[in-house]
Amino acid sequence: MTTQINYSQIKSAPVNVADYIAAGSTADASAAFLLAIAATPTGGELLIPAGATYYLGSQIAINKSMLIRWHGIV
Image 1 (cartoon, rainbow, N blue to C red):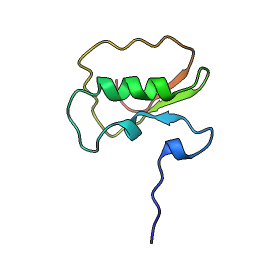
Image 2 (cartoon, rainbow, N blue to C red):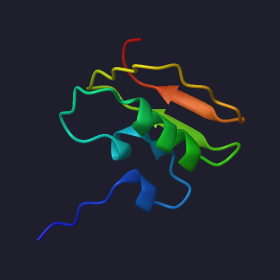
Image 3 (spheres, one colour):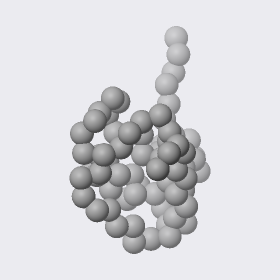
């Protein structure tokens, strides 16, 4: 038996956008990005992992201090 965890279950781990997006989704990910940003504490870290294409259908404003790690091609 294996146990699957996500980043949000590891104390002090970065907030991972992928934890808020349905697997294999090609839909507008704006809402998921906003949820992940809201879950990232001020001064925390937001991880945008490689391996997927994220479509943002609207502008996203970040109004707090955080580190954003983008892995992959922009």
